[in-house]
Length: 462
Image (cartoon, rainbow, N blue to C red; front, top):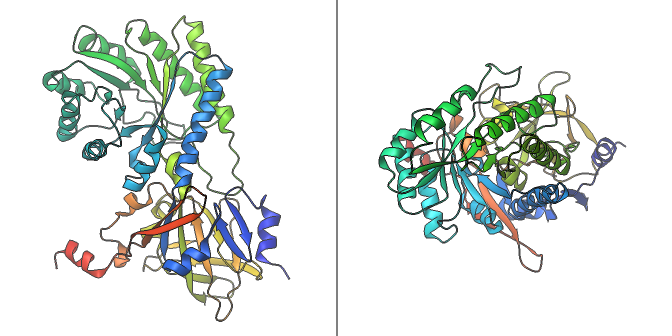
């Protein structure tokens, strides 16, 4: 008999650090998922909070090791990219680790104010303000600066943005400039819509910053949509960025920080192979070498990791409602949720996640498709990152099958419109938080119940 557990162990290097099986049931970071399901039911989203701190500390260690190995003179600063998940429990956990914040839009700033009022951050915390800024966003940034948030750094996204700050900021302040990087050749356009062209950066500095005693240039900012990968494209773009930094540093002595953005990947399949330590070492090594070549002081390094911070903390658990054979070979398992509304990246970007059975690992397995509850023909999931098929245990009468999608903690709630109106009025699932006591024992609680009809009707005006 071909058991599901045999399939997984033959296909992957299993068990892993995050996953193991006991008594036929899957454990995620040491948490028995069937215990969670028995307590709360499905569908449910969960966040395993210790994973957030673990990944932050890992990144600090990787860059710390690289700085020590290469005798690098600059310091490393970890910023959390709030747009990955704005939830309070994420920020509360992340800020336990002496980190800083990167914002993307207007209402990030009231969130920053709230964190300050609660004592979670102080006026020395770095607030790196990115994005193309409308009037209210610039106003909120200006108010932070005037209120003494000395390390609030608006990152200029175009040539005219600084004019607002020069008019309304009443104290000395620092700015950054975002470079408009060239996109990968396979992208739909050549240059990012965000940032300032390479050829305009010196002009921007000389005309609006250099001779103004109220403002100084602190940071040069760089980001690639494709992320930080060991590819010729990444290293060539990073090299071009470092060269612009050393050129600009010659005329801008206050420039001392290089922000290399976000983009460290997370595990979206059990085959995942990425050497974080090697990449940190190569980034530090490249910056140090080019600065030495150009007789330039080595800059401080900022990163803005979002998905890396929170992605691997998340999971979504479903039960199989029914089994449907639609022709001679297409067998469907219908889940008690929706991919379109609850895992929108899987639908909109064909993103693959780690998908595993939660129970019945000793059962035989077969090839199936997973169908969601909406009436949309695209509400399905039918392939894994490593193959074109999905395999799950065969359903048995009276023994409900549960499945989990893992490392889903970044972006899904905000992309899906958390708490709003979803396709076919599918409700947002309940959300459970999981943490550990000081003695290592597991504790869990309900952050939010499943969305109800009353909240939807209110939004719709009934």
